[in-house]
Length: 268
Image (cartoon, rainbow, N blue to C red; front, top):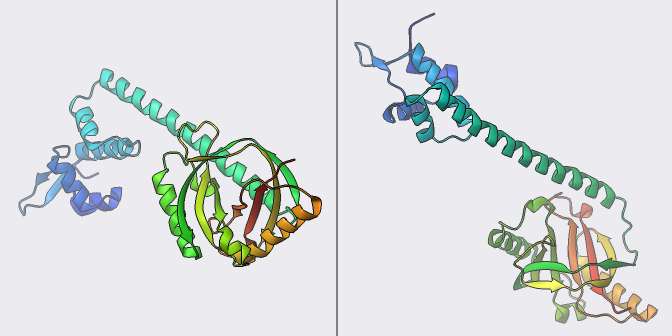
């Protein structure tokens, strides 16, 4: 085994760019010697330090923390560092388990949604729903996508997983009454029940629900069918209809796979 290695050899062996190695040198963590031509030569001791840097960086330790550890390395200091590593690992495991649960729930939801019949009216009982919203006149899908991203940016601390976030939008009743589809006045997110800050409430109570599959150009017709159903059944409505996007472009690029639910609160 050689006693010294050139920067190109170290870079290839550890998959670390030469710029990073020079950065570690500027921080004083690595101290390569120079040969007669001025080229850096790394000793086996420097290789040991690189192993430590790689392991500690994988645990998100800063370079300042790593430098301090290498300068003050002792059993006591190592025990302290191991304790910090253990806490970080526990936090990561907790986060991974939380993420696994989110993914498991989404798999179950998407599987169940594939079996939901479209065009069938049902009455659902909902608790109060806490929501945040952005109000704007929306006439194009691109505008809707932009407004959703804007709302997410504003409330990203409240949205644990955007892929599973419940997203809805209120129709513009003026256009809807003229049979003009896909026009909205606001977009909203339904938050967790424990949320402390919200913009409005969807009241608790019974809601008439109907799903449709495919693009959004059919929603004016679907709302008209819902209103006709209410009239036929003599069910008084309370409020404005809105859409909930169950399967959308977060899950698929195929519009025929979209699943959207229209809800309207009723008084019964």
